[in-house]
Amino acid sequence: MFGKKRNSAGLTFIAQGTKLSGETHFAGEALIGGELYGKVSASDKLTIEVDGYIDGELQCKELKVSGVFKGKLKCEKLNITGTGTVEGEIACNSMEIFEGGQFIGMRVKEDIALLSNEHHYSDEQLELKDDNRAVIS
Image (cartoon, rainbow, N blue to C red; front, side):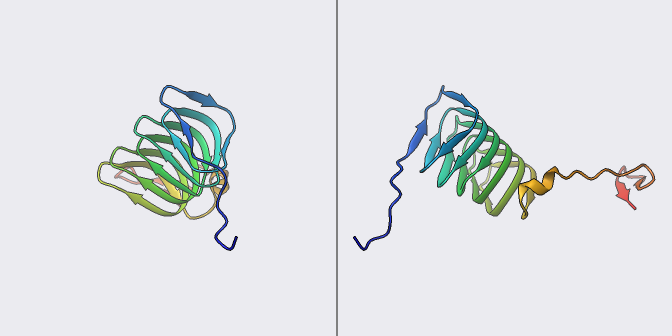
């Protein structure tokens, strides 16, 4: 009666060999052993197992990656294990990568929506240096 309010949603498990596409929402914790494609959101922690794969846009409270994530991610905490790979645009408050884990992409503190505003520079603004660096003037 006076205890903390517990989340009534249970653990959702997407088994290895399962492929889902489209918009998916998990009310509680989720464990991904299969493949998800599209927009994914979770109210709680989401774990991608060693054989798990997510490709698309993901928003969750916490993400633990032992498999593969590709796409855009917004979360509070990101944990990449020794077998995990994260590739894409990431907006998170904290990030932890264990030895063997891979992060390929860009991390920002701001919202992911800001990344869609691409900057276009003219040839007059770009100057190519001898060491093949492009400098914006």
